[in-house]
Length: 386
Ligand SMILES: *Cc1c(COP(=O)(O)O)cnc(C)c1O
Image 1: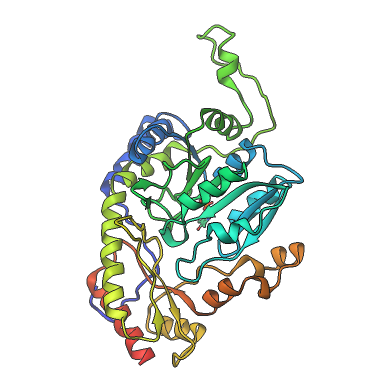
Image 2: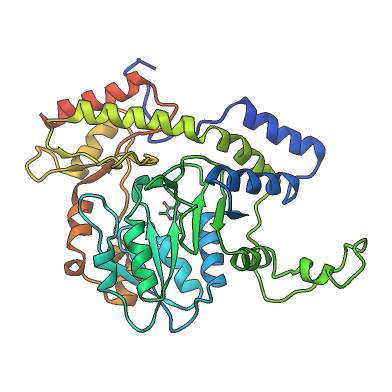
């Protein structure tokens, strides 16, 4: 690991023998698509969030966001407020339903949206506020939930980065928003390869998501009226989707979830070490959570300042030449062709996102990273920026 010639990847999943054994168990039993393991993963996840939640497993966070918005009744003519500084999936699901995203700029320090910036975008058409907890730092959910209540709006959290994250001592996923959706994509804080989870306190919303994740088949209501032993019968109540999670993926999830806290502690250690080693360089370092709250540290995003000897693109290239892979989160949506052209977005409307994007760089940051690798990344930055 200390060999300076071995490249440092941007990310590597942390998968152990437990995950492998659990997957083999599913394959040996012969039940590989949605079944017992998926149910168990949903129950484990609800318990992990602290109880009182209903969890619905799906095959991606994108699918989960789509289902949750559908269950909230979002449709043509509605507006959903969404951060400009996010992954395109946050906004695309709004378009799936024929509704319109309304993009809001972020705060330059937290890289999250604020209640003040959201409030300016509320119109009579607004139906839902979507929040993204960027990099795993909670947005001001207290303020945002109060704002939603004041205007009778629904809230959905794109919690793709936020496991485990807390807001005022409560885990993201257990707050009073209408739904929170987690991602288990290959590079997220826990992974099932592809996968997602909807968490909600609303049983009707959970029930609708369960029906719509599998073709709109409503087995439960049908079963109430027929002989319980007859299980080939079902009814279809809507043209649903094919968004169910497989038991193979759930097997990974069951074991990864048990390690979520340990993974976070290691990422916290790495973030703390980076903060220490990178102090004094022409960089803006990411802020931690305050008041004892937990930052999931899904991403460690630095920002190259204007007086640095290299700009972001040059620094990314130079690090890559040293075998250090970095990434950029995110290209703001207003810079992407579809969003820019469809909604006539300009750079002037998003000064903070523009400023952050111009210098941001996500460093290698994953639980399996060794201390030596962290030191190598920091040493390379020191050499290039001094
Ligand atoms: C990764 C990501 C998603 C999409 O997650 P999938 O599980 O790949 O669908 C959505 N929003 C944000 C902010 C993400 O980073």
